[in-house]
Length: 119
Image 1: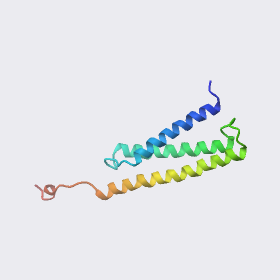
Image 2: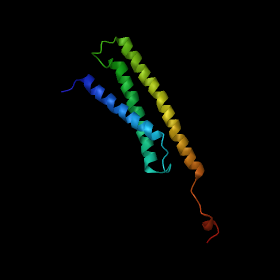
Image 3: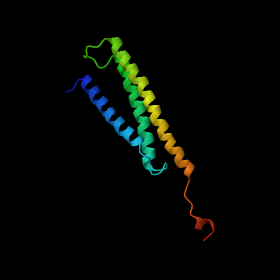
Image 4: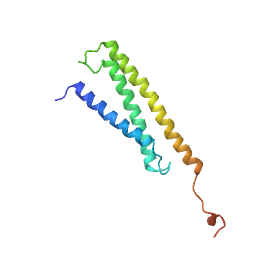
């Protein structure tokens, strides 16, 4: 059975892969800001923010990962970098997501000229 450090390494790997996927996805425009993929993007981003913050706090409080040979101060400094540095990256992703949303709102629904004349 894996120990706590191995579970945390697995969790960190999963979060890293989710971040890579989310970052790649943030660079591609959605077909519509009202689409299910846009809503899924928002939900995914907020879940990632919550998971990242929780992991940073656990690392700081429990001095994780243990068995690395790092001192308590080094582990806490690394956890602080993860916590606050992650916030900065997440804000950048959120701004990109909201810019796409605003672009979609400005465009509005497309209206054909014939429908305006009552034809």
